[in-house]
Image 1 (cartoon, one colour):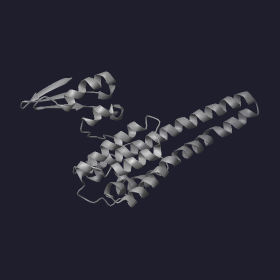
Image 2 (image 1 turned 90 degrees about the horizontal axis):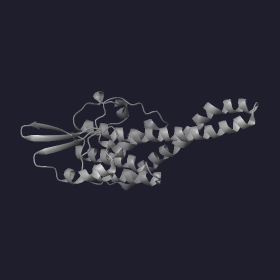
Image 3 (image 1 turned 180 degrees about the vertical axis):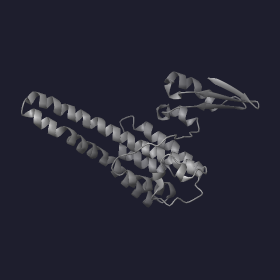
Length: 237
């Protein structure tokens, strides 16, 4: 913990906060909820979604992307306009339901996409080996299935990362950063962004996108989680 004393204000900085175990985070909760007067505590993390929900709830999340990440999955270009449309839909439940249904469809297609890509990588090799040794071919088929599951999880993480990054960059827009200076300006190439952007709402969207990422670490009804997420964007924090 580093203390910096400037103008009688103290700032405590915890680097790699996600490395704290549950016991350490629980011990810090009271301090986060009621920090000492004239002080600020910063929890820095490159993987904030792994922090306990109780820790996250006592913090204001500010995501600062510093480099471009390529989000390469089927439906990515359709995803960003849907995320923006749901952000601006307010309490229009018809629009929100349409957005949720389309986003759920993009997420559901990731598994099929992964299986097709994996099949292309493995099938010819397995067929060639099958002519020589059936037992080895069976082992390779099991490896192919495991590889498909791993590829799907990778695409799933990419999808969730795209959601979080979109709202992080929307928040950056709300703070006056031009589209050209964003890590992923392509997010907004097909979107007519209306200014000004409600920065409090954008920050709220960032927070609940982190909660969505955290929820996907456990067995969850993905469609229900995504639908709840889209509707919660328009519920005040």
